[in-house]
Image (tube, rainbow, N blue to C red; front, side, top):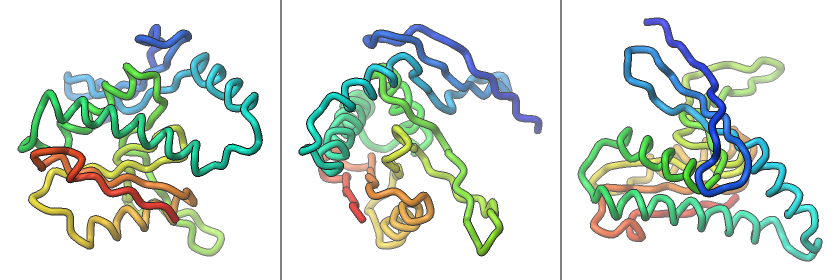
Length: 181
């Protein structure tokens, strides 16, 4: 099957600026793959540049994590538990876009082995703002293998923070784990 991808430019919802949305149109059903908020990103970067140096990276990550968790709670509030992971992924992507948060869906994660970059098939469910990995699950219970998967992704991507979210719970707060390296 040939995959067709294209970037569309669209006015941001609720945020000043423009967004580029990557959509996979293969198979007749459009699927959002990623969103880049160009003008929005510039406004956010400008604001971050004017903040005092006393703010640590941890505080910035905490704020981003809170925003993403808020979007996830909104999705869970409307859908509840019991659906497929892919459904929550697409709905969370929509909610992140509505909130002007830049992300990429199913972001490929190559492995650096010596001087060679190898595509081993790893895919990050959501890479948010190029600094937060969000791994989504819809399982009965989060297991050690799920945590190990997220920790591996964080290390391979050379990032510091990740969220593991299990949507198959009554209250989403019981299904969220935050990891910081």
